[in-house]
Image (cartoon, rainbow, N blue to C red; front, side, top):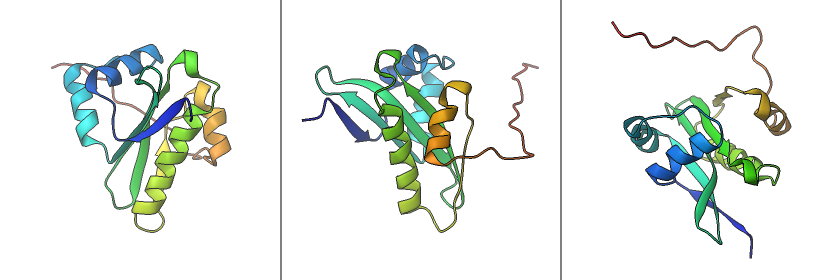
Length: 139
């Protein structure tokens, strides 16, 4: 029996927030996390069988028609280097390819630690496009 189990669906809200924090992603509020769990097109995570703890995750957001964006790719540091991130990204891409209409546009934002993994899966840079964000400013 494998040490880990891939689960289709999101982890519990507390696990989601803790996994983001412990994997070095930005912290989110419970309200933001709840919206992420219910508003995703597809979500999967990996549990350690011995502890039943969520140790890796990823999700797909998009319109279900042509645009699919992979987000929240995270693996707890203790479990990195064991192929769990690869299992998650492979499951997300396979789900898109199985359930999306033909010729989906699949994107992600590749932070430096994940670039090698994403390149191994087949992701390439979008040139000359460049990711941008709009900082939050209260009026």
